[in-house]
Length: 260
Image 1 (cartoon, rainbow, N blue to C red):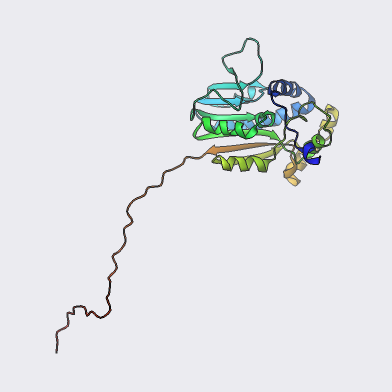
Image 2 (image 1 turned 180 degrees about the horizontal axis):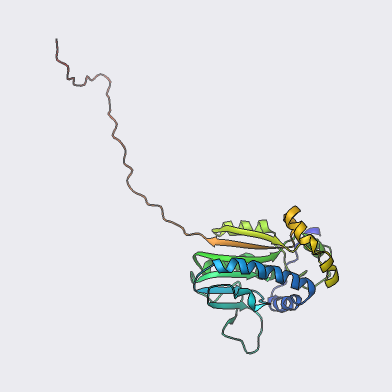
């Protein structure tokens, strides 16, 4: 029973509702705290990620998040229903991207793994569309935190973000290694307790500094950057060895010494 409380996988077909609910949650006081922290991380990370195409998987609550990127062609891919969709939005499932293999320079997974019924397949799709040396940026909630404890002990709460499938950073690292993605950077954030009161969040804001300094493992969320490694072929050729002299017992070799 405890395992079921800890691992509540979203029901199939709920990605649309979860994405729209997450956009609303980011307008709440705790959502604005996380929004500010993710925005600061993206302002540091994106200027160093170059290329031609950036794909964002998951809700994009703040369009300014990706403005720091030098990549000009940016597309949001989500399963959300939108009226009058802009050219920057493509409606599709993250587990079946309508993109060519080795065609994208940067893929951002913003809660995309937690909202999917098959998160490993979503990560596999991100690896497939990435070019060699491309980067994947992952944002998610950590189960090993106050936020994870709040989620585990309130199984009746079907609101976001508690209904998302929290994935540990260790599991994410295992999946990255399995797919040949090399971890480059990781950071934990969101050390404030999971409360909806803006006054309480302001009162506990000192926990952000304390958490980063004293208990960084228990951050409520994390950011991960990984690089798609290039598989270099191993050249196979003839192995040159120094020819060894064979000495047969009973045979006397020639000698340059003169007989006396």
